[in-house]
Length: 248
Image 1 (tube, helix red, strand yellow):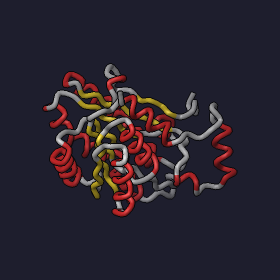
Image 2: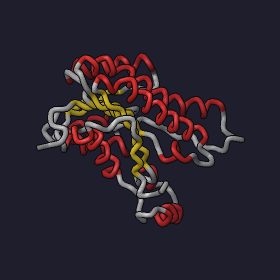
Image 3: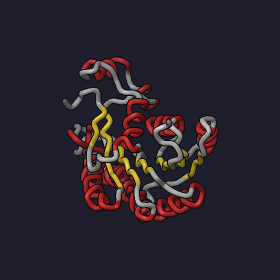
Image 4: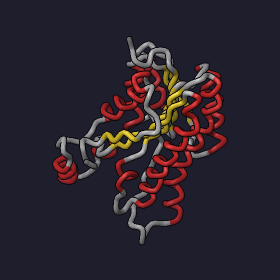
């Protein structure tokens, strides 16, 4: 039995990295996958085909999760195309790193808008349908930086910490409707983005982690499968740190 058989999932920012990894593993577990992408229609089409090869329905939507109206339209279109939204994964995110002394107002606002306001936009868009269908699982992608803070990332840390407070509040509001809301706080995850970093820096990261390795997109996807499936039916309002023991 596949853990997400016949469930419909909406995943933001899934054309690469962690989002793509989640989409792939969800399809393997039987979930139909609606996903958003930012720019490359070609990459989105390729991902659709990959997901469909697991015998599920898949569709990519070019949509800006940070725009309120676009998020409402996305949820409406997904409902029309898939019939329900059982799982929402708010994964879209960006960084604009700089020391607070140097950071611009624009870079602060942009990161908060894409990382935090998008979570509000999409969650608000799916809660009515989830209430109507008497259940759902919302998973918000935070970060260990949102738990601990990080020099040079005041904007990113503020946005990711905001997600944690938002997650707990949604869990309290919607628990009685059988809608669960949890957050995942990834640590150092090795993706296309980290591949561009200096090898010496990456090795320093790895050795500082108790499990002595960076995480993979599969590590995050597996945590998402758990929180999206009925295995976690009594878990809500929690932050699952998937960090190899980094914050222990």
